[in-house]
Image 1 (cartoon, rainbow, N blue to C red):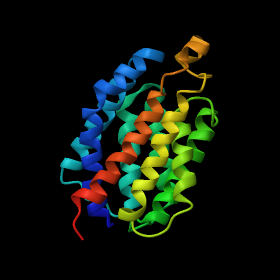
Image 2 (cartoon, rainbow, N blue to C red):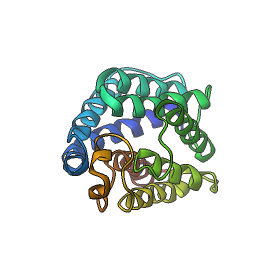
Image 3 (cartoon, helix red, strand yellow):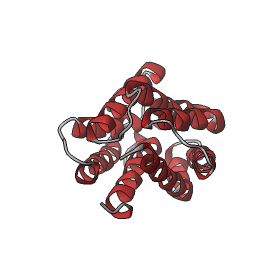
Image 4 (spheres, helix red, strand yellow):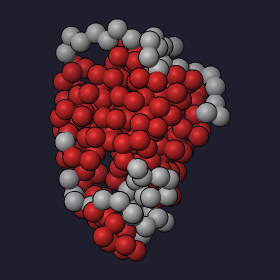
Length: 210
C-alpha cells in the first residue's frame, strides 16, 4: 500500500472514528469521565480535514507522523497524548517507509506501543488501550503477507484485547477510583485502538480492489 492509498485509508478511518463518538462516550460514561469519545471525535475530525485537503504525504512514515501531530495538537487530555504518541512514535520507527505492508504495520504498532509505555507507564492488564495494542502487536509479529490477508487477524486480536479488559480492574485514570465496579466494562481507550485497526481492515479488505 503506497502513501496515497494509506492516506485514503486513514481518511476512511478518521470518518469512521468520528462516527464512533456515541459508542465511545457511552462506554466511557460507565467507567471514566465520559469525554473519551468527544476527544477522539475532535482529533479525528482534524485528521479528516487534513486528509481531505490537498496534503500529499512524501511517504507512509511522514503521513502517520503528521496524523499523530494533528491528534496531539487538537485532542488535549490523556487520550490526545497517548494516541498522538502512538502515531508519532510508530511513525518514527518506520522512518522512510514508502509502502505500508504487514511488516511495516507491525513495526509501526510495536514502535507506537514502546512510545506509549515510555509516556504513560501503564502495562498490560491495567485496563487501558495497551491491552488492545499489545494483542495487535503480538499477532502482527506472527504474520506475513499482504495487508488484505493479515489485517483481519490483527484487528480481531485487538478486539479480543478489548474483550479481555472487561475482566480487569482499572488501575489508572478515573476508572481507578471505581475499583471492582470497573469490572464487566470494556476500556474505552482499548475500544478506540481496536476500532482504528477494524476500520483499517475494512478499507484494506473491502474498499481497495487489486
